[in-house]
Length: 376
Image (tube, rainbow, N blue to C red; front, top):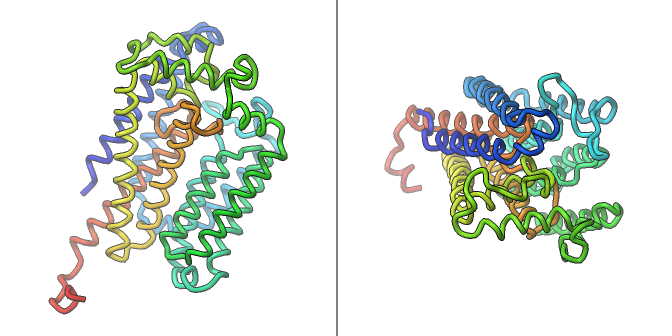
């Protein structure tokens, strides 16, 4: 009763991520630890933790997530506050809570908790969202609360992902078009203000528009990434043969692992990975549609939310590496190095599998419809 295709797609992405993280991290791992496989072994540990967490999530019924969605959101807010008080700061951003074997990034937990909470809200207040402005605004207040703590870290990238996914879920729930347009315009205006307010964000935008103007300064990371894409050509330089990962390209195994993929595996490898991610997103959207068609609203809205989340975050990560959008520091789903991101996204995939499983059980036990009902 489980979607085996979804399982194999996810495992394929995780295995690809393990291989590419290992390849991209050899130079920096050797320099920092004198062990070329240090980051690869850590990522392997994250994969094991992710699979363990996923196996637990698969056994939890959706009604449990719906029942405790508010408490889950509250815990994520506490974690966001904790990271501001006692969090580990890296490159001027306090985003991690040290937990011994790995550093927890509360922003990743906040993403999933928000989408679960909004799915539950849309089940409880579906008519109110469709008919009144008050019902439309209530989930936005929760989003603004989370965004406030995220921007204090600061973490604009996660805030944008949450915003885009939230408005997508509200639109699917039947929010009025003028409300949707007004929210999108307000969000774009706010992002512009936030970019102008911080010099480092403004430098990212200007360097993105013309990275070659300052190739050894603000445009360094992007120019090195573009060189990796150029060297990759159709079939790449071969696995392990990247030049840019030799500490020319910063964050080669995290935010810019896709550039190393492009250099080593070429256009063909890039296309295969994007097809796998697209297949996962398509699966999520189809599961969501099937659930909504059979009145399984919580699972339907959550599946759509996960699909939008994965699609938009992939778009930003790949776009940043290819110079299409400004750098935002978001991971490539199930591929980039990072324990919090990998575990939370694996949990999200497990939720998709559970949603599909419960929908199949419902359809199997659903009483047959009469001819009049089918015509309606």
